Length: 417
Image (tube, rainbow, N blue to C red):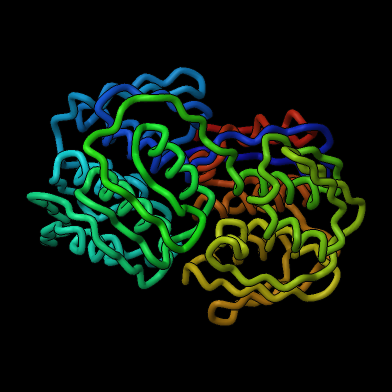
């Protein structure tokens, strides 16, 4: 178990660089199983979840090398189509290998995946779409067994714009016969990055970033190079870190359009922002004004930023209302923020946050990735010292967070216990 010991009260000042996107890297690494050759993926973040996806590929027979932030994958000789239950339980996104295995081998066997317990994320949309492509699926004893004699392009309408289902179906359809159209598809930037990766490798995909994606099937994909986009959630977390500590922080390697749902709300809250082509500067010397937040699929306010902005709004002037519409179990950080002096009341999927003048240090526990990030932000702004247990959750989505923050004025010590 890892623990963060944080001394609060230090404004963050300087420059901090955003790493490559975790949520773009995971499906792209899974999609490399489709390639008959070697691909080179740059800007791959050194994260626990990415390590698990690397292990999935190795388990299936791919050759993977990873030096610094460059990953080279050769999947020409993959021999397995079943992923061990142990690997599946370590990470939710391991289910993304389902679509690529079906595209490449026409068969796959996986157990139901694990990951952060933040709410229901069923596989039914994935399986419904795969059946439409011609896949025969059996569900028994917690396993999904899928097989297809051939994959045929078709029209698929998603009941909800699920990111995972959109990605899995894109990968399955790339090597299918004919044209597949995904309607009501997710629009997240990570979907666009997956499209760009696939097209770079010889696929014919268009429409990512809209709710209609068309995939013209090709016979094979070839190796090439691709760079992962910056992580918009990490960028947003750093921007809030500058605001909550009342510092002067410049966040680089940012695509401003990707964080606009957040920066628009921060402007409403009176936070000082300067935005350029690839960086955002945040500067403020007072507590923010209260604002209301409602999480929605992209381009709405991201659910993955809800805990972090809640931490900021605990120090706001007035009362904020946060409504979580994506995951039903994403308020586990509320009790921990209360331990630090926050005034928050939860009613169903709504949290009512009354701003307080200051937060105090406390011993708290990170229940999941983004909850852990929120607690780090609150601890850096709080008085005295805080201890955050289960900090390994944070390592799933942030590349050595404590090193980045210590370089701009924070005081965070990682303890292995």
